[in-house]
Length: 189
Length: 419
Image 1 (cartoon, chains in turn brown, green):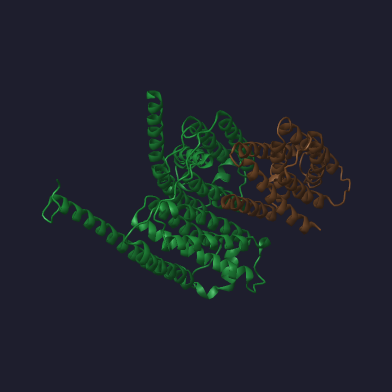
Image 2: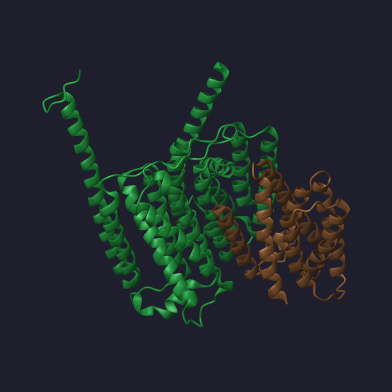
């Protein structure tokens, strides 16, 4: 268990480093990778969908992606929304909690939940677009990276569940994400 | 019946064996003593008293511990090596945080008196002397330790004491009254505590080694589903990494690195995904490869590889982006690969293949691609290109590793066919 802890700590630290540098350089591809909140939420969506199983593996991340695109468009329009950063941090917390609790969730409910969070993640991406960039290219960039993170989360989840104590390990991963979510939420209050 | 008196051939052979072992130990001891004295004096003259005292003190303590506890009998490396490798992973992670916090500037401003007048501590000097040098030494030490050689245990002592001292320095910086230090969410503090834990437990393991060998985890052959899931995970990771690198460095490095990753994945699927590589044979070579490769990275930092690539590709690649991706974040995963390889995990076996393909096919580009592209583009002669002088050395363990993997794979295949 120590090595999982270690990996999470290093992962956490690395993502904070890059977000601290805030160096997504205006590229849509890099934006989801350079913020710890986006990174953990997107991987958590994949993990949770693997935990629910069945069609959720692709339906739940699809809901997130779709609403992220919608949120991105709203962000491009410069429509003002409040508490966006707080909602994003809260998404990490709640997704971690959902994985940790491991309650049998319906695909519709899970899809609806992640869709709400996806909207706020997308809005944050859209609102931070540099003036010089093409909107479509930028959006394709962040959606491709988000899809990659969902796949990494979902496949990792499925691989963890293949192990003998996989269910417990997955719940432990959820707990770690939850703790990070609590930390991020406190920072945003 | 064997004659077991002092005139029997067996008696002479046994004595000769003992004498050879003593000679080997003495050779190790003399090499260690002369090398550490030379290193400390060189650092004292070139950089200053601070680093010379630190390295000298660590070497002295390591020598005492080694001679007292690990010199006469070499315990099994299975109890020490995993912690040692994790320690290296943590020290590179700690240095990543330090890089973000501008540690070199902080040290130079606060402890100027510890440096010689002619020496200025900038980021590059800090990386070469305080990151690249100790990490390369530790990786070389890992090679000897994983081969269970006497001198390997000196490196184990040196490594764990070095980790302890570095973690204490970081704790002092984080908790001391320094207004000029950028704490970066106190991440250095978390890492320093983890490093301290690893180093102290490592020292305790060296003082009281367990008699029985810790069992290396048995492997469960991957099912077809698991193999495909792993492949999907690796391909996704490669694509995300490729996109990231492309946006930062342009197409040239992406071709080399992503080509190596995909080649590595094919190699992994064909061989070690079925039966993991033998850690006793491959981990020493892998750690040697990493040591030689990190020295190569040091040369690239010193001679600005990123600027060289930018000049031929026309795609700017900043020093900061290069430092993060190639000198800090990459090595964390590569060195962790050694731990994972030792535990016979999929990640380690994939990284092993990635490194082998990368060193054999990717590194010769320093000779065969980059300088030639520059010749064509800039109309100059065949000249030095950043990283050239050290690019080929990591190929040696990579080729040896490849031979072992292929031989083992053929042997296993033959055994399965016979059954």
